[in-house]
Image (cartoon, rainbow, N blue to C red):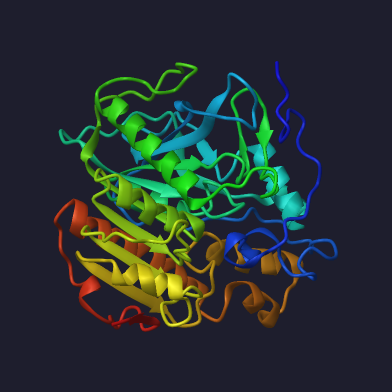
Length: 402
């Protein structure tokens, strides 16, 4: 078997991922210099993710996908773009099915080692997803949301939002953007991010991955299994998705990719960016007439010309909100996980705030559970509530930007 330059069956050489502006979010990958110093305190409880609030149990299944329309020059002649993806869905009977980990073990070890938190690996959380559980029978197809992670992150980094949507009746598909992520393949290969000079992965590459994922959604909807290994899918998954009701969301570079995908693929009916920098290359020259929502933190229209330029091209329903005290990672799993890690390491409140900002973590979790759900409910299911109409006393930190 050909050995690819970024893959090892036994793991990966330890590398320190350095932040460089929007391309590499600092706190998501590498903590500050003090973060990994010293041994954890004797408190050794497993970290936990927020429990989804919807009425449905969650099922999940991984897929190995190959896009044969795109050759992979990095992998070598005869190779095509290879991606790991995960389908999440409302489940029926879950009793006999194991819960899924936040990340596969090999990818988790590489990710935490590079971030300086390697000793947290035994404490990594489980998700609410039950691997292989049958799809809940409802008589209706499921609206679909696809998710794009940030630079040098991983497809599980916004599991809180994903499983929240699924618990309320959505299917979700998360994708690991090859060469800019930590992931693990079924045969044991562990992939880690490559240096940008070795394998520059742009928002356009992410967007192409998202369009390919939409092709796979259509295959599943038509009763065909897109997994290249032809592994059996959970009972009821084939034919259960509704490709006519598809949305997308992403964090950081994934938020920019969501916008890029919408500009080139009309199958995405609604898009959500979680603090995306909106750095378009080439620069944006066309308008977008479908609903788009921006949840801003550090990449705001007031401070970033690219975000302001993108906003000016939105011709359909649009909304921009911002949570006071939020940082770049405040709309993801880190708001739930870092406060627990702080107790393990004995960090001070100030040290914790260096990572996640001053927004109350419990409020941050509730924000990321409520606002994406309200957005996709309104635009994919035509269930309009009042949360997106203006400021809410339930979320005093959230500001609606004109």
